[in-house]
Structure formats: structure tokens, C-alpha cells
Amino acid sequence: QAENFCNELGESLSGRLMPAVDVSMNLLEKAFKPGAGELKEDLQAFIDHVSQKYDCGVIIICDKSSYEDYIGADFAGYPVWVKSTVKSVDFTDDWDIWQYSDSGKTECYENSDKHYPQLVAAQSVTVEQFKEQFLIE
Image (cartoon, rainbow, N blue to C red; front, side, top):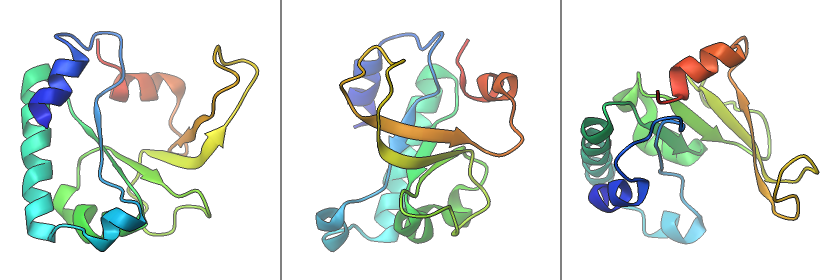
């Protein structure tokens, strides 16, 4: 998966946001979810491969259950993008990006007829700090 991911990204990430891996699961995926040990090993291998290829970090995208089951303390120090669209994030204070909606629309966006996730950065992070942390030079 990591090799395919890197093939799709191309050789350079210059000027783009840090790559991300989504470990949140829908209801069907939760019914057949892998064991914690297996998923954590696969996730670490994915992160290691992508990090080495691009010499940058990888953002972990997760919801409450995937954070509690797989991420938590085992991946402390990695940037975390949490999905919590029903209420504010109440399962961790250790997040960098919060996806609070799955279906935003705006007239300012070039594809204004399409829905997109709405995100907010952690409180007190300036635009410059956000760029420094997540933008690849």
C-alpha cells in the first residue's frame, strides 16, 4: 500500500501538504476490523516507508474508535487529524487538525458544487505555524 501511495504522489511533495493516512473505519470495516497489533504494525510500516521516501512526517487521520483502539499513546508525537463531526473532540487533547464536518460547501471554492471536509487547526496555531508544520518545502 505504501509503495502504491508513493507512486500516486510522485517524486516530489514540494509545495504540498504533508501526506496523510486515514485509519478511521466505517461500520462495515469496524465489524471486520483487524487486531490492534496487526494494524499498528502495518500502520508503522506505512509511515516508515512514506517518511523515508519523502523525508517528512505523515499525518494520522482517525476517529474516536480508531484513536482509542489503535493510535493513542502508541503513536504519540505523530501529527493527528481527528474526525468528529457530531460533537467537539472529547477523546483526546492531542490533535493538530479537527475535521468537524464532512460536507462543507462554499462559493469561494473553485468546485463550489462539490462537498468537501471542513477543518480547523488546533487552537492558538497561527497560519505561519501551520504552514511550517504541515507544508513541504
